[in-house]
Amino acid sequence: MDLAYTPEQEAFRAELRGFLVENLSGQVREKVRLGKRLTKAEMQDWHATLNARGWLAMNWPREYGGAEWDAVQRQIFEEEACRAHAPRIVPFGLKMLAPVLFEFGSEEQRQRFLPPILSGEHWWCQGYSEPGAGSDLASLRTRAVREGNHYVVNGQKTWTTLGQYANWIFCLVRTDPDAKKQEGISFLLIDMDTPGVTVRPIVLIDGAAEVNEVFFDNVRVPVENLVGEENRGWTYAKYLLTHERTNIAGVGFSDAALATLKHVAAHTMAGGRPLHQNPHFAARMAQVEIDLMAMRTTNLRMLSAAAKGQAPGVESSMLKVKGTLLRQELSALLRRAVGPDAMPYLPDFLDGGDNADPLGPEHAPAAAPEYFNMRKLSIFGGSNEVQRTIIAKSALGL
Image (cartoon, rainbow, N blue to C red; front, side):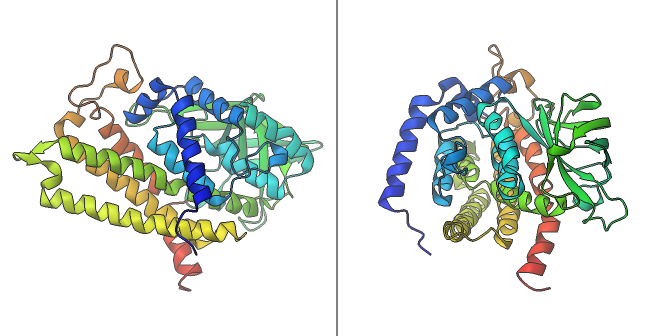
């Protein structure tokens, strides 16, 4: 394993930096830097900008419009995009559904569904969790009954991220209620404009409606929207989750958050001296930085294996656990550094209102909402408790 970047990779990094300087809107950059909420249009504009350059579908084959970057190039992009305060690429179609279609879908499905992901015509969301099936996802109860050339779907999904913007959803549905719970599940692609689909927002503690409930009432889905084989959806779901868990690790996001925290701690006075000179706070910052260095090395180990064609294994669970805990600790330290200035709830500021001014430092209004929002990281994508069980069984043989 080689943990050093090659001259070619460093040249690629320089090219990325130049592109980000030239193409990333200053207004959007500032909104991301200050933790403000992006509109759907702003997210779509960045999607289109990357697609025009050929860099949107970074891990897709070139024959389908992808950049065909290797794992190291993708990691360099994440690092530089986070450092530049670029918007997060919405992953559901690009990084979650597409790998499943490449691996298990038909060529007709790839030709039908991949181009609209690139163009932005299709905005996908993920229909996995249900009120009674979160960490125990295999207990899902949404039913799909075959009637001729259609499946009739009834049930409910919850915590559907950005579902209010989506027009398509990939869903796990139960097609054989008599089979073992992991063996009776199928993977369906559902047009959300179909009669019987209802989306209801869930307002979170920070006032945002980032997640949603999705209800299916006798929704008719063409049989050709079944991915792979009927009752094999659990296999496809696990394959997708390895990609989701690696993305959740968020090394680039942690790097950017640590840089912000260091800046704030150096310019915040506590007890007559900068906060970063407080022994207790400095020790917590140092521990985060050490853990981040170790996680970056683990991530590079996984990237090195991926470059040799090896599939993600238990390392994706390790990165998910450690990466989410690090991001939670970074948000907790920033909120502590901001102190009482983090208390006011300023929705106009967070939503990017032109006349909304922060109370206190510019980074204060987003500190508490970010802290509360980060609590979700150790739950979604497979809770950290479940990931520890996977690690114990797969890596330790327990």
